[in-house]
Image 1: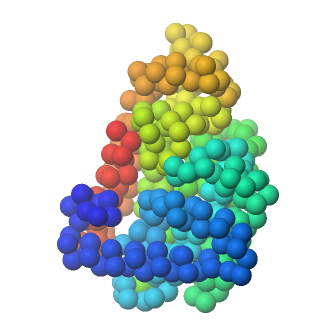
Image 2: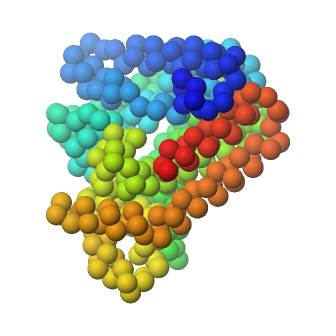
Length: 328
């Protein structure tokens, strides 16, 4: 495994990505400096907590299909990560989360108002940086932000007529997670001057692995003793947040799962949590979701077929496998 989490990565590409990721980290931290100490503390809270940095990494890899030396690519990578961080502050307020990335969430450390305003502050920093890149970048970000908001509204509102719960869930995931990961890839390809067909392929690839990434998180919430996101296992279950595993159980409506389905229909109490997790770990729905995830990986990598051969294409293929395998 390489230092940036992608197996069998070309050594030359690895060195280049590590150097550029350091530039991303440096710009990320310098861009949220300000004159007000509390804002600095709150906005740095999740930056310092770390994270996988998937979005900026994908921007940098996508840029390999053109001229990766354009400094605007580093700026765009930072914008994608800052946008992601901003949504986390807002999500934690809506979910009343206690932990994020292994540290106490901002809403618990300070309060809901501070967490929301910190997210807004980070969005403002994104707009400031994108304005330097140009109007096309600003428009792409605006369209992405629209999808992020719509995805959150859909999740809050619940399914609409004509959709099953599973179809609704997948649309929410596509908007809330897939959209920004797709944009991360698009920024890298676009700003590197890659061919239009390459830009479009990488955008579709990003959307596909974004969905896979979220489903892998769903599995980790159940199957892992400690989730990669830093949240406590069973967090989604406790909060009554639907995941693909729970939706597969509910939609099958097996009489043998009657009691389990009742518990999965809302937030789960602390007393029942262990029992429900154990039941899901041994349930066929877990295997079904693992198979669904594996198929997504195949579909994502099939999109790469027409890309130019080389270290970057191989890196994307192996990145997909790494994202899927982290849930097993």
